[in-house]
Length: 385
Image (cartoon, rainbow, N blue to C red):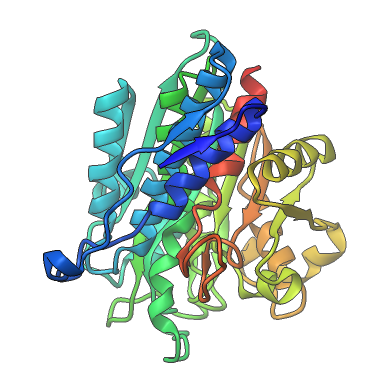
């Protein structure tokens, strides 16, 4: 494919590279190939004919880097739950770390137990699969520079547990790892761009299943910061995993942490499938994330974190209730996460309505959208300038 752009801006060149890759992407790993004479020719190359300047070349390379990161996130998202498991994230993380010279930390069940991550472990106690906490450290900045922390929810499949989901459309719950996929994709892109900044990517991955050992409504568990949590609904499992991931992030002394999760159906009711819900206590940092999402084509909308809503997550028997009921569900979920943030700026992205689509969007086929890779990368790029 050749694209002639004689007067193209650098942003247009970057966009063409991203768009060409997005249009050509497909997940065909599990399909029987058609007969050779029936196969469509794949897009194998894209040449952009534009002014031959160093900035245009840099823009094209940046577009390729973003496309490669989005491809990782989309492939992980499109994989069925029996193919994309917590161990798959370990394999992908180790591959990224090896190719880009990153440090990687991998925790299993015994490590999580040693660290006192009772919230994460409560979700994982119904599955025989090894839960995984993975941290990738990219060191592009000065040794003493505080990193940006990117944190992702990695529920490879979510049945809802004892509070089981309705059967119709449950197969879409393979996308409940989209936040973690976004972290993996962003770390790939950031390393390809060689951005002069330190970044740590953290994901918590397991599956939310049913068994005789599953955690139950009414249980009380203790997170790694010592806070006790009254479980109300086992389908509110993502915030349990993220709670311990947010506590874990503190050991890296981040300047800011951004978490992304397909966290609540409530955000879909509130914002539909067009905007990411953006939550944060510091308006300046929230605005920075909103601007990053706008540049990435992943627009967000600021949501309140008012103390008025905290009454809904007060518990009679523990430090905090896991859910606050249906009213303001995405807000009380974010306020729950805030209970586990200590010593750093923090923004929460609820991507439940935007990380995947059940219909063809025209510019993207139905399935994974690549969100929030672009928002993560644009935020880090801006911080690196």
